[in-house]
Image (tube, rainbow, N blue to C red; front, side):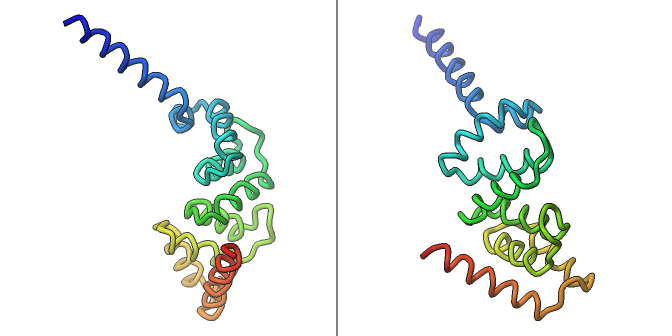
Length: 156
C-alpha cells in the first residue's frame, strides 16, 4: 500500500522532467528563448523538425532578433531532409521575395516538394500561383523537374 504514493510521485516527476526538455512545450507557452535554446541543440544534431522551428523563430523574430538569412539557412537544412513544412516555408520566402529574389518557379519547386511530402497547404499555394497567372503550366512543370533533380542530386 505504501508503494502507491511513491509511484504517483515518480510519475509526476517524470512528467515534469519531460515537459522541461520539450521545446514545443515552451514554444506554445510563448517562452520562445527557452524553446530556441532547446531547438538549437537538437537542430545542430541534424533534427529537421528543430531546424524548421529555428527557421520559424528567426523568420518571425520570436525570442531572437528577426533574421531572414538565418531563417532561410535553417529552413534549407530541414528542407534538404525532405521536411515538408520547411520546404513550404522556403516556398513562401521565394513567393514573397523575402531575403531572396522573388521567384515563382523556385517557390513552386519547394511547394511541389512540400506537397509530395505531405504538406496540405503547399498544393493550395501552387493552385493560387497558377490561378493568379503568376505561374504558367509549363513553368510549373519545370519547377517539378527542378524539385525531382534537386532531391535526386541531394541523395547521391
